[in-house]
Image (cartoon, rainbow, N blue to C red; front, side, top):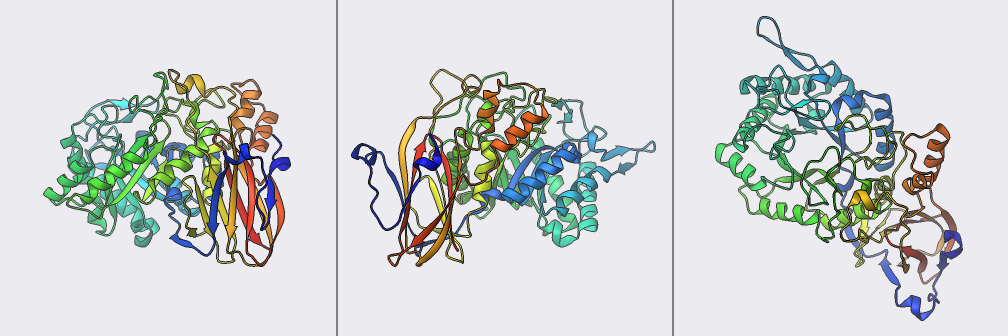
Length: 521
């Protein structure tokens, strides 16, 4: 369907369509003078990345700068800050601690330089400090407790002091220090819950000994777990806790599958993701620390970096739906991750492999990327809006921005993500959506319309159309990038009369996303 031939603008007039279509019509009715309040910006507070050492790569840094520009992410969280490939810690021949922060400095200097703050994940264990040799991932992150908790605390303190000297107290006070990753999973933590709490207590003391204003928290668990237990432990033992953190994913088969061999199934539960967040918020409210910040430091449709939902056009509407359902129950929702430069199972041999990233290894933007880019183009003031699958804002110049989507769960019963989302999947038509605007000032406006969906900013479907080549030529990369630019597909001049009304009617298909921006000329 050609977008330009079917989109229509109507000013101060009823929409004339057949009765059969009217029955399917969805209406987003907005009055620009009716303000809901300040737009909730948790969507771009934090973004995830694979591991710290990957952040030393030029292409990783180029992609981060691009997504910072387009989506406005403020913080970044990653694994492996203290693993051996960052060269942080060893014990010399006399048994003394020896520290080296050159790799970390190179990475953090870059982050701070482009305006991205570290959401510091303290882990994994340097092998010289580890009590065992159990590791996870291709890059061998050691997941054992420290052989000396005192030396662990000293490492954390020394690192926090180093950052204070390098970046200044005010800057580091704006960071977050999160202790470890998913200690409730055997793959990530070779100790008990009690061992983790001990690890946390020593790390928290190390951070706070440098400056009591520095923010420290955890438990960074999988599956929204351990929040009441974490708060109770810290309250009982007078251990500092400034925030709690955890993770959730939209599949139900488990929590860890680095190679994607098990087969995952996208949950059809409407409350997937959001139910976990809302439950955690209630747990915090009922605790001894009812005002704690809640940070979801990982979330996505699936916990495996080999799940084609991440590449599919369905993902853009999925992200928007889940973020709207969560609302302000969490202070951040950190999508896992921004790039497919991600080597938990080792370097990938395929251009598109269901990787977590919003961009693939070559920097081709997936449909999910544009969910965040479009969110970042909304203004600061949200309008009242009864539609469950849209957000609308107004800026200080009287311009209006409307982001709307159709989220539809289309995975058939008895089929997993790896079988279904690798196909060319034309969506079903859903009729049309009409956006009605009232309360506009009389004048001449420019309307721009951008779209994400099947064959709209949809590099993955174009890639399937190429025959899903494992390796891409330079012309193929250029062609796929051209397919996914995020630029508006249409611009129009709109004249608003004395009645202050305007409307736009758009064709709607399953999992379509539209961004409408009406700006005064």
